[in-house]
Amino acid sequence: MKMPCELIVSEILPTARGELARQLVIRHGLTQAKVAKMFGVTSAAVSQYIKGLRGSNSYIENSIYRVMFFNKIVSSADMMIEGANFADVLCDICCFVKSIGMVDEIYAIQGAKEDLNKCLECPRDNFNP
Figure 1 (spheres, helix red, strand yellow):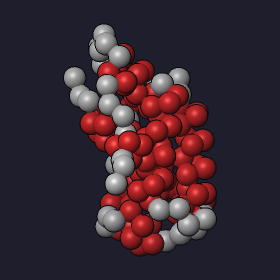
Figure 2 (cartoon, rainbow, N blue to C red; figure 1 turned 135 degrees about the horizontal axis):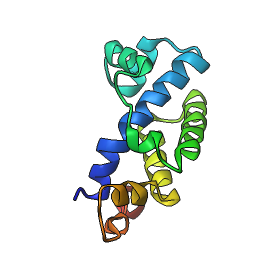
Figure 3 (tube, rainbow, N blue to C red; figure 1 turned 180 degrees about the vertical axis):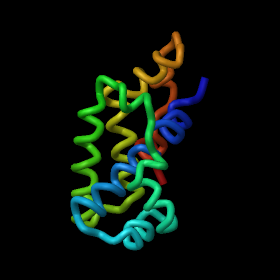
Figure 4 (spheres, helix red, strand yellow; figure 1 turned 90 degrees about the vertical axis):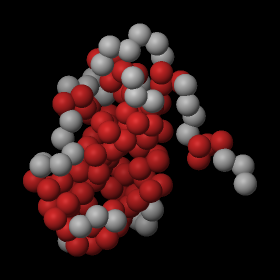
């Protein structure tokens, strides 16, 4: 079974990036090149996100938390327009999906019996320089 951070990276963040790209280009009018620079990817990758060729996930599409997740993405895109850093926005989304139970739900769908969502805490929350 994947660790929580692995699950988030493989199952949740691609969808978050795809929907963020769509929001930034379609709703906020940014160019694909501008979004690509913000994300640290190519314009072709952003084009694939917008067309739905990257970032779709059946776990999220069928999740009971789907509406909450996509509402979070809308507010996250707004935060980026207001100047929030892309990495910070993704970390915020990660914390959000753990807090609402989406990660637990995906674990259950994949057949996990134990509560793996609680095995690790975000290093950003526990970092003491």
